[in-house]
Length: 265
Image (cartoon, rainbow, N blue to C red; front, side, top):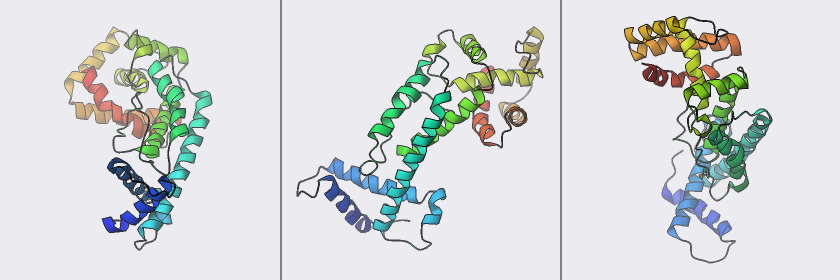
């Protein structure tokens, strides 16, 4: 729904009255801009695919769209907090301080300070631990929700391996892995890909010289795209077998495959 400025200004005006507690005080341009952003964020939230059933087929008044949108934002925040609390008890950070500080230490601060009414577009956190998905197009609770979804998928992938083995792979990658700001899931995924390329069962965790030569030959004989495509299909079969994956985990992990192939080459 595209609203003209004259349709949005009364909505922002009512929100400004609530912000100033209905006192006749002046407001800075920056604060007015923030409140306009809050209104637009809520309206866009109401227009998300999962909320389409709430919206009328015909264009509704801006005030109604905003009120429905802020209810959607509030519901999204509750859903996100519930998902976070469910993941936390079995969360493993593998001694990596960046992951721990981002997810365990900083994340509760978002839920503590998130301002649904006056600044829902503010993500608050910098989310220093990188995930595999590009979340640059998201802000506010939408970004936190997508981020936690990514962490859920990563934990699901990593939990199939013993914590000792994951730490071994991390230490092989970098002896100071505790201070790395790299994605841990991608590092473990590299080991899986090496076994796929070598045609060796993953139960046999150590690769010998012949395996490495075979991998090197494969990487030299084809393009990044062709190798990545083949690996993505093989990875999908691996995840379906060992994770009973319906496609969500595959879609997440295969994003990292081309980058891994380039670095291996």
